[in-house]
Structures are given as structure tokens and as C-alpha cells.
Length: 475
Image 1 (tube, rainbow, N blue to C red):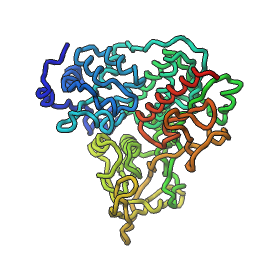
Image 2: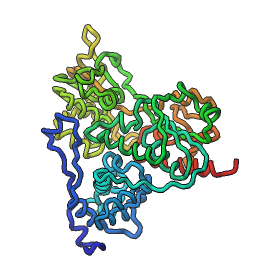
Image 3: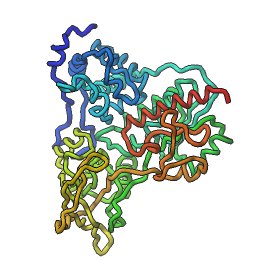
């Protein structure tokens, strides 16, 4: 069915708004905030596509999803066909449709966005992924004949899962090793249920299992087994390191040892993976947020996840402390808006100098200082400058540090011939992602530092292509 609307008529169609739970309801539960487009909304949104001859949106997608083609299938009502088209390039459409920053990638390149609201590509991607799941019909792509080659993937986050899917389709035997007790990496332990339901991640992983990917959990590479052993007695022909960058960064100020001070990684892992949000049914050791003052330091997506989680754990106050202004916040605009709607307090131009404890060693307050903005720094954001004499105490019971992450050194320290940079990240060729060790490739956050889910998936696809070429070449 050809779209009968002229380009002029298409640009005048309004972008469809994402239905969502009301803030006064959702702030008290962990149910998903965004509810997904209806069939009518999806058809209306698909009708807005200008069907460019050279779609810029594809250039903006790190995994190269064929946007024009899948949107056309939605307009025609072939939702399963649209989902299958996406899966040719993206093994996690239900995930990326929810957490990918489309506004900076595919939608950011959309021609409509030059004068109008860009096409809701992420909304449409989520719609077809949810539709295929509701129908119980997942279009699994065909596999090439078995090559007899075995690939070990270290880490089951987005980079590892993306590489696993592509390599399996090429006919290779793929085993994914995960250090925790459940696969999914940051998709499981780092992103809250209200933004990415775990049932969706598990379904996508089950799809990979159905394709033939093997998952082994509770395997810590560097302790349980080394890379040399994988390539030696374990019989793998290549290894892809996709461990992410999970080492939390702290402020380096006095008092960070106090009870009640967490890294965002630890806090979110205890809630997302260990059931701390289901207290007392799950009696996990997370300091109780109920009726307490909780502050999160930072303003990225992880900070928003943490402060909104604290709110749902019934914090009396859920405060976001940020040393710049809201204009410099790196979090997605939607996450900032949702946080404000739910009642998060934004305390900007403020930096903690010290955490203060009571006689029992528990956090009681943060000594803070007001800031003003100076000239832009290397990131392009204006540098915060302390205002002398502006120090004050902010009463707190819980503080969560969300300042990003660094490279966990375990794999590198147990693989002596694996080259790293001065910060501990693995050095890998920008094109092939091969490392200094033959047969070993690396990609995602463990190479680039913390980035987005879709960028990690792009690295996974890039690695899979390079690994396939390596395995196909003469020894």
C-alpha cells in the first residue's frame, strides 16, 4: 500500500505523543512509564515518513537499521515484517526502542527534524517489537551452514549480545560468558524496571538462545578461567571482550566511606538484579530509603535512573545534585522531564565537598558549595567555579554517586599480552577491533569508556564482522 499523502501533507501531520502513566501514579511503582503507541498511532506516525532516497536516519544509526523499509512495512500494516526487517541489523529492537537516544542518532538526522518534529523512529521500533512479542511470533533470521569455528564472548551486555547474534548467523558456534547470575549485563542490572522491564530483556536473550547462542553465567573471566585457557584447552578460535566499563567513579571527598553512601552501580544493581525494591519479600542489604532524604550526585541517565528509583523506594526527598545548570545536563530530555514530573528536586550549581556522619558512622549530611559557570571546558560545557563563602549543610540519609564508570582491570590484569591505555581501557584497532593479542577482539565501553546501548551494539556488529573475516582467513 503506497502512502498517498504528498510531502506537504506529511510534514503537516503531528508527531504522535507517547502514552505514559500519570506521574502521581508511576512515582509509587516500578511499572513501565511509557505505554507504547497504539496501532492507530503507529500508522499515523509511519505516514509522516518522507521516504527519502538517501535516508540520513540510517547514517545516524550505529547498527544501520533500514529505517525507511521498516517504516513502510508499518504503514502497510505488516508489523511482523517490519520487526523482521529491523532484526536483520538489530537483535534487541524491544530494548533499543526504549533506551536508545534516538534524538541524537537516527531521529537527529531525520530530514523532518530540520523544520518539524522528527519521525518517531524509536517509538515505531518499540511498537513492532512489542507487537511481535504479543503475537508470540519472533522472526528469527536464517543461519548460514556451520563453520566449525567457536567464538567466546566475554560479557552479555549490548555489545556482547549484538556480536553473538551476528556471529551465530554466520554459522559460528557462540558461547557468551557472564560474571553475574543472569545474562543481560547493564540491561539487567543497570537500567530500572520502569524504563526497561526485565521480562523484555529476558525475552530478547531467549530469542538468541533459540537461535543457538549458549550462555554460561557465574563465570568470571580472569578468576574462573582466563583468556589464554579459552584459546587453549577450551578450544575457542576467537574471543570478543565486551565486559563494559563497570568500575564506579567516586568524588574523592571525605566521608565517602560512610554507611548510606553508594555508587549508582551498586545501588541500581541491588534494586534491579537483587530485588531490593521488593522488600521485605527480598531482604536485600540496601539502606532503606523510605521516609529518608536521598541525594544523587550527577546528571546523566544513570543519575536520573538512580534518583527516580529512590523516589519509588518511598524517599521523603529525592534530590539531584549537579554542579552545572540544567542546560548542561547530559541525560536524555525525556528522562529529565519524567524526573521533574515525578517530584525529583533539582539542586543545580551545587557540589558536595564532604559527607558528614553521625556517631554510629552513618551519613547525616553533605557539606555543599554553590557554583557559578565559567568558560566551556573540553566537553563543550561551561566549567563550574566555586563561589567563596557559599558553603552550607544539606541534611541527608542516603547519597548515591553517579559520575560515570571506568575500566574494571580484571581481564586485563590476567592477560599479560593485552595492551591497554593509561586509564586501563583495552587498546583495539578502530576498524577491526582486534587487540594486541592474536585472536582476541574488544569493543564497547571497555574500549571507548561509558557510552550508549546502541553504540555498544554497533561495536558488537563491527567486531562480529571482523571476527568472521579473521576466522575465514587462512591460518
